[in-house]
Length: 82
Image (cartoon, rainbow, N blue to C red; front, side):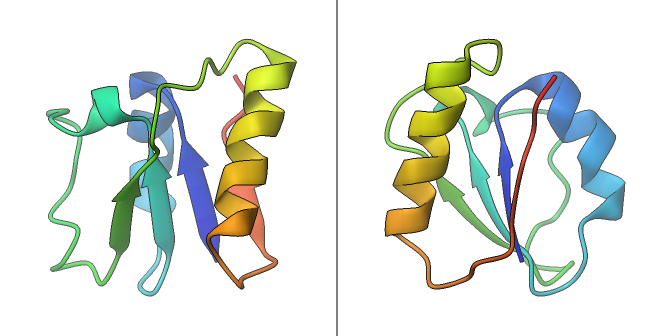
């Protein structure tokens, strides 16, 4: 499974439900978030998106999804939509 998290609030809400083996894509601004768990200890793979995507704009959500789809073979993708 792939999860795209774009906001601090989304990270806080989703972090406890992420399961081992999940690939997480984050907006770069979340790289130093205090909400981040110990990704490796939980068996999660984390990658940063190449640019900030605005979670409140439909076009930006589509762009983030398109980017991740091009960089993964996994078809099970969940994107944060506030």
